[in-house]
Image (tube, rainbow, N blue to C red):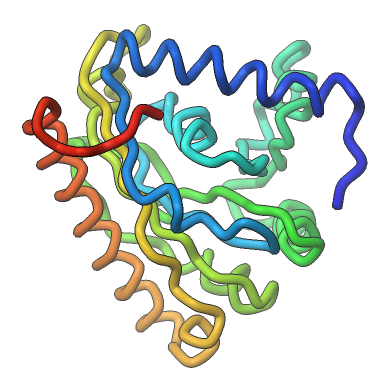
Length: 222
C-alpha cells in the first residue's frame, strides 16, 4: 500500500464524517448497496458523472480510501495542486497523448488500492447517463481487478455544469454488485462497455426512484 503522511491518514475519517453530515443535512443524502465495495484488494469504481460534487460524493459512500483522476491542467494551479495530491488525485492528460496517468493508475490498482473513474469522460449535459468510453477496460483487465458500478441522481439538479455555484437537491447513490475479474477477462471491450453501461443505467434509475420515495425506502445516510 502507498505510504501516506500521518496528516493524510488522520484527515480522511475526519473529513468523511464532516462531509457526510453536510450531505445528509443539506442534500438528504442516502446510499444503498455499500456492502458491494470489496473490503480489500484493488477495484475500479466506475460511476456516472453529473457534477463537480461527484468525486467527493462517491468517496463518502466508501470506507476505504479512493484514488481519483483529475485534469493535468489543474495541477499547474498553486494551492489546487497540493490539495489534489493530498487527496490522492492522479493527473491525466485528456488528450490521450501521455501515458503517465495510465501507468500510475495501473500501479495503484495493482498494489491493492481502489480507483474511481467516470467512463462518460465528462459531466452530463442533461442529467442522464451518456455513452461510455472504453478506456476503463484496459485498466481493469491489465490490473486484474473487479469493476464496481455506481449510479446516482441528484448532483445534476444541485450543480449542473452551466452553474458556477451549487444549490440544494436530494441526492441518492446506489452501489451495484461488482463485475468480477473473470467476467472482465472474458468479455471484449465492446461487450464490457455495454455491460457496464447497462448496469449504470439501472442503478441511475434506481437512485432516481429512491429520491422520489425518500421517506419510505430503507436507504442509509451517506
